[in-house]
Image (cartoon, rainbow, N blue to C red; front, side, top):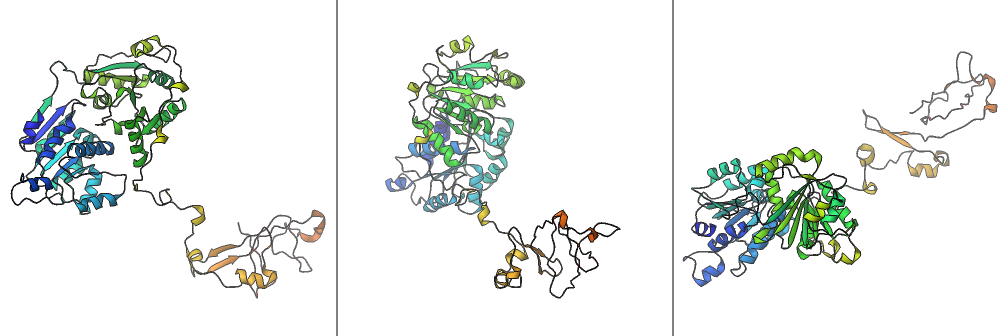
Length: 524
């Protein structure tokens, strides 16, 4: 339905259920309408046409994973015409992307943040773009990318073809379409006998499960008969990481994809999942949009999604391109109000999910799970290579230095600022050379030298080493303390000698020429 309208150059709003081929719905017209060097050589392009280095088409997507997937699809579809497609997204080095842009590209697929950065730096020239595609526009609205998208659109030529594709169309996206599109054709595709919001080929199961029993329940679900690749969705990054680790300890080949991982680790997990080295992918909603992997038979909502749109996109990772699949949703007790809203909005018919545990008989019957399975995968069934078999690609990830610790220095390289630390080494009587030449000035073992800076003059004041002394009580003369109070530093007896102290004291070295009876002050 999309191809005739899009190939004629008209603006299009495409809305269809996830898994029905929206990528090629805009990809084929986009690849067909751009001019490449082969068209000029074959005479298919008008006379005087020049295939330059600036992009002719721009595709904006909300997530990095979707950016990589759309780029791969367009490269595969445009291989015979030698179309140059570049993925531009964050989390990896700028330099390779900038070098490719300088050599020349025909189609740029990117996320809003990195695109806006490269446009602002002058590396991406949008003056020759004649086709704009906004894929999964509602997700960009949810992630707060809409202002960035508007800035990008404002830099494009006024005369262009704009195509907007998504499975759901909220009101703000329709407003965006009216603002930036010219007489668009709204195409909404669905099968005549499939009037529901979800794909009919996906079997849905909803259970009320307890949070402490969910790991055990997951272990049973992953051992169902005929189970292929599985995607498990969580709401939080920490839950995704903990669940992936827990499943790996139970013997399942699992990997995690969430925002706290570096881009290299995220792409490593997705490659391992696509290649079959890992058969359980635990992810947050960053992988719920547009990810198309063949052989995904089960999708598990380990935590209840936030809204009905997220639910539709999650379960749409299975049952794609006419295939069948199973979607299992585990609803905790505190998530019942949230699930009630989702069920009502989509009219799913699961208003009261049945209470289910890892030992419930109906769980084994509904999902075709053998009753003999346990909570750990038998060693004979552990046939996957695992995440470690997939290499991590060096993407030159941003935000890290050569040490890989975000630029923080270690304690060995830490320096103190200030006049005492940044100035030259002291060469006065308290320096190391003076101590070496004068044995009387050497520091006693266990003592330390303290240094302070005069706030008015800026001169360094050296405080004498601290020495701990202890005097036996029997050696203290009876007349050491005066009648009116205990002895203090500086008090002297009749012979002019200081009274010994029983407590530890810290004294400041008297400067040369000071009187012998100068009072020594305690330093805290």
